[in-house]
Image (cartoon, rainbow over all chains, first blue to last red; front, side, top):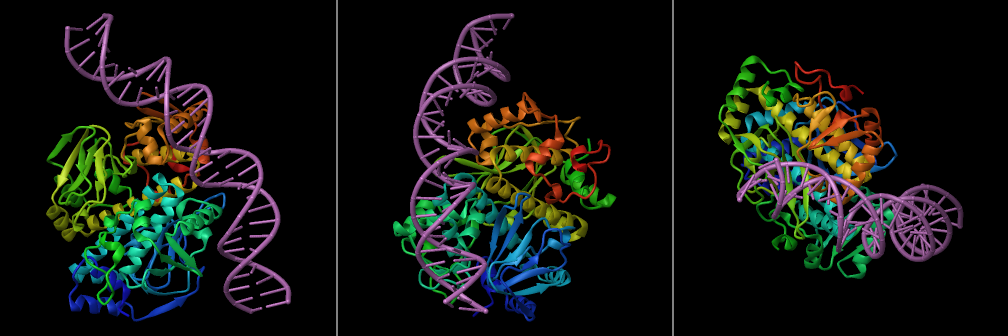
Length: 250
Length: 250
DNA sequence: CGGAGTTTTGATAGACCTCAATGACTGTGG
DNA sequence: CCACAGTCATTGAGGTCTATCAAAACTCCG
């Protein structure tokens, strides 16, 4: 399969063959990490940048009372903050939700890459602007939608994002996340996530089995979520070689 | 008073006299805009970048049901997305909460500035990383804290940020925001904001009068908010010439 | 087969919302 | 300077959504 980082960046910007090669070059020394491990922890001095090649990760933060808020999902092809090393310490952690293949990129590599290749610099800016857009939409989601719509919106987002890196089959995608973690992402308890998910199944919107979700009624899912994919700033159809992204064409 | 943009950037990075002069240069042609106007609206093709010299603005988004979510406050010295012009359309609006003095900076100016002045490029990256950090903290705030803590946290954040651009006097700051707008920022109704604010006054944490807030008990305010200012990534004390920022030293 | 983590279900409580009305404040025009 | 309208703040009553607590069923893995 194509490098998911390149698939993702191609959703927004045309990259020449040499730019693509330079990005491939970055990914030569990947390593596997286990679910539950942190790639970076709150308080760390960030030095290098991480790129996720397979598996899921999340940004999260613990509160004093032991509660946890998940603030973003990182999917294959996602770069973790191309320029974090500018900050003195991490204000949150990045942990793995599943086993994952990751690349650790030294900051020097990022800096020379962006110095020498303006299209890549632009693509990295695009990537961080999109991350911000996603974060804003999550804020809207938690701030203004009820539990049912929140969950629906999350499913819509994940579907589109996974689609663009070629990780959906038919109307199905893998969701390596417990209901507790869904709750921590949506500002809900796991119990409530469970009830809402049950209702969503009863109403025929989705089916879930063994860590995977099947979208049964994408139109209604969009409808109840009030989903508008513009905040993802994807300009073209999913990774070449993939079938078109139905939900994306609404 | 010193240029608030420079005050703000100096909180993180040393800028040489020539860099500071280049930034001053940007601010020569400011203009006044009225409260309620949009600087940029959702759907616009972003071309230029805005800098706020005085007054408050906010990022916001309307939902289909007419509800509104405010996703960030922009204070004097804040730059609105140094690189938005990379995106094809705005996914949210930026509106003025008060009358404001703003500078419209053409993207070419941004690009040459960052090309020629690495420290400024770095400062701009820092600025967008901090914006993201703030956004994440807002997500935590809405996702995991109750109404009382949410409001307290917002006050703590505003106090620190305003302090760093020299806009606090004693323990007081101007808050040109209605309770309705506070509600739209915190995922609450204005009615509930009112009740919570009343309780906060009764308990002696803050006093409010005519669009201004006085912090009466900063320690307890931090306490109930669970406030930890590290997400603001401010490295040094507030703008030179200002008295020290008490709340900042906890 | 046992055990830990996860999902599911029920009952109860509480935080926050909705609707509605009153009171305070601000700016405007006579 | 006062009357007036409009916005904003305040207060009350009742309803709903979601949390909490607790226990049972299920799944996965060693």
